[in-house]
Amino acid sequence: KAGVTQTPRYLIKTRGQQVTLSCSPISGHRSVSWYQQTPGQGLQFLFEYFSETQRNKGNFPGRFSGRQFSNSRSEMNVSTLELGDSALYLCASSQGANTGELFFGEGSRLTVL
Amino acid sequence: GENVEQHPSTLSVQEGDSAVIKCTYSDSASNYFPWYKQELGKRPQLIIDIRSNVGEKKDQRIAVTLNKTAKHFSLHITETQPEDSAVYFCAAPSSGSARQLTFGSGTQLTVLP
Image (cartoon, rainbow over all chains, first blue to last red; front, side):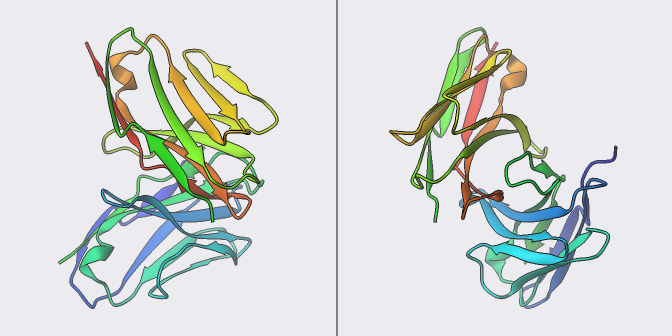
């Protein structure tokens, strides 16, 4: 069974630009969560989608948004990029039960110059 | 929301010794406590989890203990090996959802040969 796939793996943007990251969950998984990982703040929850609906949202500004498609694939978008948005963005899928393993992708490493 | 504190931030042990990492959480309603291992440049992977209806769970050389009264849980690794070297994260659910995890700040474990 294929794992969680994230694209692109690496990208460089400049301040003020916007970026879209993509995540394909494990087949059959209906929940997709996004996390931001930085050396200073660690792993922080961004949002979670289940059956195309945003179920939970972390404490991030409105510049961070996402969506989920009918095939459970998810995208997240960051607009008006700031230097502090440089991070590893991790997507995780799960079957959807309230307790259970998150399967993480390799992440998309965003550098904002 | 949930607050998770993790100690120590770094831990060095000799191969064959035991390692213990401790976490505390704030939300008494939390009922699921996973531990993730992240090797350098790799994705976080679940190594063990515990639910609040048990006090201890073992899986070969890894064990997790939970004290709900004190609101803390610990990871124990026995007979450490060099391949155990990684960053370990504890986590607890926010808003009652295991798909929205609050992670501890991580422990860099180094096993010296």
